[in-house]
Amino acid sequence: MMQIHPDINCEKVDILSYSYGKVEKMVSHIYLKWIHTFPTLYHSIYKNSVYKNIEENKRYRLYEWLFLSFMKKLLEEKQPDLIVCTHALPTYMLNYMKKRK
Image (cartoon, rainbow, N blue to C red; front, side):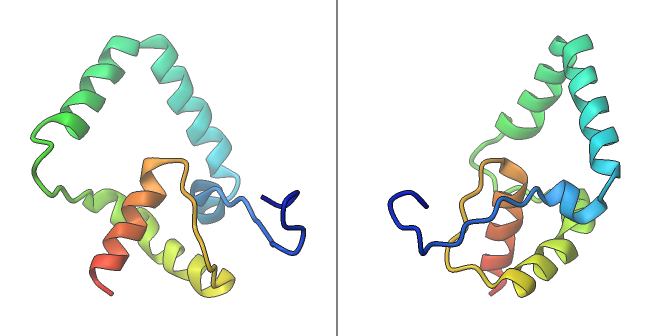
């Protein structure tokens, strides 16, 4: 995008790192280790939490509690014109916020 339009300012922000700083490395390491060590368990949990009853509007209150205030702060700081999410967590947070104006 920036090669086509050099006047565009793009930033990559990892919400976990933005929210909890150095803890992000530890959490990511544990998460990846868990997936590598127990792939079947990970798949089962993921499948049951995400794909079970897909028609329902689900709330992930733990994620809301952990990240919502940081997402609000980030949006206030950056005031972006466009947001592209590459992970489900920030997508969920932004959709949650949009629904509540």
